[in-house]
Amino acid sequence: MRYLTAGESHGPQLTAIIEGVPSNLPISIEEINEQLARRQKGHGRGRRMQIEKDQVKILSGVRHGYTTGAPITLVVENNDWTHWQGIMSAEPVEEGTEEKRRVSRPRPGHADLNGAIKYHQRDMRNILERSSARETTVRVAVGAVARQLLAPFGIRIGGQVLQINEIVAKRQEVSLDELIARTEESPVRCLDKEAEPLMMAAIDKAKEDGDSLGGTVEVIVEGVPIGLGSHVQWDRKLDGRLAQAIMSIQAFKGVEIGIGFEASGLKGSQVHDEIIWNEETGYSRKTNRAGGLEGGMTTGMPVVVRGVMKPIPTLYKPLMSVDIDSREPFSASIERSDSCAVPAASVVAEAVVAWEIASAMCEKFPSDSLDDMAENVRQYRAYTEKF
Image (cartoon, rainbow, N blue to C red; front, side):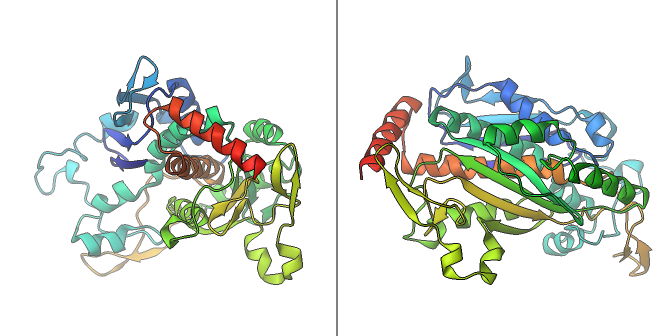
């Protein structure tokens, strides 16, 4: 499977085209919209979430509720487009007009300056509109399709926020069902009820100060069969692809799988997972420090991936920058922004992980239809249990 996205932050719509989804997969628009709504929640979100109530439209590849095997086109319209039609018009506009709304002051921490230099753009709006995290909207929609492809095989995904700024949640061992239910009720998608109000207070303080906060999110995938991914080439290693997916999310600066960086301070006997076997389930591990991946392949244990999101770089008390026209110092320009988007980023992380797991399933069990894929998965699972 593969997909491309298109669209700008303040353009008329965001679009994704997905290719390679097997036919006869039931697709629920309501489930896609549910994921889009999850992305818009969370303490610390800005005013745009009140303006944009994201809803998906499916323009191709699905008929009467089922995929046809043809490319799927997803569209999420920007409800704020009416205020930006002139500024973002595809038609030429005169210099000096209100519609030009040229940006010449790059914001520290954004793609503005680098992109302007790379693409020879003297108006940095041409960079910031596409590099905006608004693009994650349609990626969450794509991830929602991936979730629906994984569901018939018993593969389920949940996520949580582990840290916001200096507030670290206490680890809690709960079932995936409980994790999903409890994080959905939390304004910061956190299991720890003691950390939750502290996180919210830190976000409120940052907003009051014109500042922003980052944090750490975790994604857990259960029900994954043994052997997705491969050890034979670097670009087929599933842990590498998951790491790339997390790092592709706007503002993410770090990723780890399983115990990750903690392993650097431990001995081998404290890191590796002992292998066990029983007649009912076949092979598994006593522990899951590897995060469900060894040698670039899934082990059958839950896949556990964490990502670090930096504080959002748009600040209401902006940092200093340099105007590219005058080369004079200025306070960086402000685009509408959140004070903390870590809870929303948790949902985006779930989406990109769902896509990589679904893609790996389609590579391992290539099929034109869901029926064939289901039979292939059934036979393979029977084989692995008896190996």
